[in-house]
Amino acid sequence: METLDKETQLVAVEKVLEEMRKAEEYVKGWNATWWEQLQDAYCLSLHYEIGEMDVREMEDRYRGRYRLPNAFYSGESIGVPLVKETLVGNNTLRGERNKEFECEFGRVDWYGMVSHNSKRVFSFHNDGEIYFSKEGIRRRTKKHPRRTSYEATFNVLSDDFHLDITLGELTEYCTFQYHYITISLCGNILTKKWNDIEVTEDLSTGMKSVKIEKKYDERNCQNNASIAFEAVLNPDNSLEMGAVAISTHKANGKVNGTYRFDVSRKKGIRANFYSRKGIKVDLTTNPMLLETANGLLLPTPNHQDSSDIVVSNFASSAQNAIAKNLSQRVITFDSSDFHMEAIKETESLVINMLKTIRGELPLSGLVERIDNCLELIDRENNLETPESVKTLKLKAKN
Image 1 (cartoon, rainbow, N blue to C red):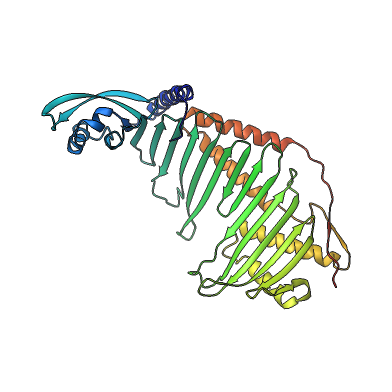
Image 2 (cartoon, rainbow, N blue to C red):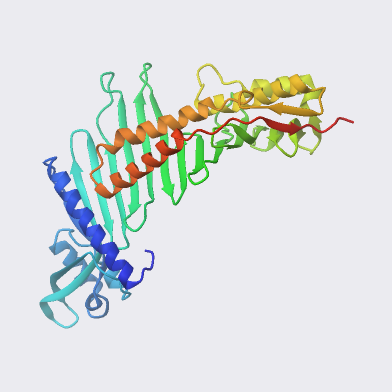
C-alpha cells in the first residue's frame, strides 16, 4: 500500500466511502446479493496477546466476514481505516473467553455477486485504490456469440484509470476467438491496446508511439518468424519515423537472420538483412532476399489481423518509396506514402469498446474519469493539423 500522510489519507478514505455508498445504491437496483469481507486488519491485541488458533477460531465464528492474519502477524498501523468493528473471541493463553477486540480494517471486498450472465467483484482500499471486475459466464451460442469480461482500477486521488478487457467470440466455425483490449490513462499519457497493437499517446502534444511485437512460437511450425515494429506518429497521424524487424528462427528458437526496414529523418529509408554472423546486406540490391522478406510479411489468408496489416503495409510502403526514388539522393514522402489507417481503426475499436462498457459500470468515479478521457480524445480528434511534406535523405551508394 502506498504510504500517505494523515491528511491525504483522510481525504482518500472519505472519497472511497462515498464511492462505496453510491456503488451500493447502484447495485441494489440489480436486486443483487453479495458477501462483504473486511481485510487488511489492524489490532494490537490480536498481534501481542493471543495465539494463532484463537485468531482462526474468531474468523470461523464470523463465517469468513473478517480476514485477520494481517493483524496477527503485524503490529504496523494501516493508517486511517475504512471500517472499525468490535469482534469477540477467546484468549486461550490467559484463559479469557468472549473477550472484545477493537479492530480496524483498510480494505472492504464485495464478492459472490452472481447473475445468469456474469460474476462481479468490488475491492475498496483506504489508500484510495478501487478495483472492480466483471466476468462473463453466459454460455456462448450462435444467438449470443460474445462474452465480455473486464477488470478496472482507479484511485480516488487522481484522474487516472486502467481497464483490461477480454472479448470472447464464438466464430461461424464454432471455435473460440479472443481479443485482449487495454485502455489506461496515467497523467497525460493515454494507452490503447488491441491484441498485439499498442498505441501510446501524449495528450498534451498529440504525438503517438506505436508498438507491435509478435514473438516466435516454437509450437507453430508454419511460421518461424518473430516481428518487432515501432513507429512515431504526428498529431495528424502522419508517420514521423518507424522501423520493423522480422527475424527468422531455428527450431531451437535462436535467430537465424533479421530483415529490417527503417524510416527516419536522419538516415532516410533503408532496407537491410542481417545474418546471424552479423553480415549486412542491402535488400534493394538483393532481389532474392527481398522476396523472402516479402513472403514473411504477407499475412496468411486465415490470419489477417490488424497487426499483420500494419506491419505489411509499412514495409511495402518503405519498399515503394525506395523504388520510386532509388536514383535520387533525397527521398521525399508525405502522409500518402505510409498509410496508418489500420492503426486508426484499432484505436477506434478500443474507444468503441470503452463506450460500450461505460454504461454498465457501477462506480461513479470510474465513469467520471472515463467521460473526461473521452472528452479529451474528442477534443484531440477535432483539432485540425495542416499536413506537411517530410523530406528524408538516402545515403549515396558507393
